[in-house]
Image (cartoon, rainbow, N blue to C red; front, side, top):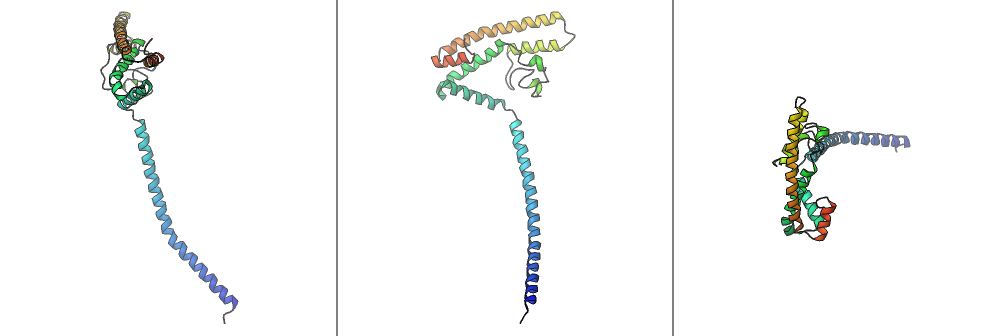
Length: 203
């Protein structure tokens, strides 16, 4: 018969052998998991960077659509009603911006030095308007005046003449705004008119 010491030795050797075998088998699996984790981390980082890049891209058309949809909701208009109402609202908004003036960060930040960094200074600085849209007379006159002010060699007479051009363009826009506001009032309800007054589109 085996002694107790012999039995204990056999058990210890068996346990040690099992532990060694299990460690040997687990090492490749851990290596594969580590590689998978690294690949997953790299893919996750690339995906995150891609999403950040997409968020950083400014889409003027999408922004315009979102603003139009928001305005439609504020006015409580159906899709059919907004097809008529929307263009008149947009026209009043655009003319109001022209009449209210060109000091929209352009003089403060400069033509090319706006926070958005693109040509014309992006949202705050420089060239008014959005890509794909022709500049209005007020915007062109404002740009001409800005160019003169950036030119230290410009004479007072040149600046004065450009000021006259800008003021004339604004006066013309003011007359167009009065007509556009009248046309808008003809098709809106009292509640919608109150919304326009609150937004500064109507007096």
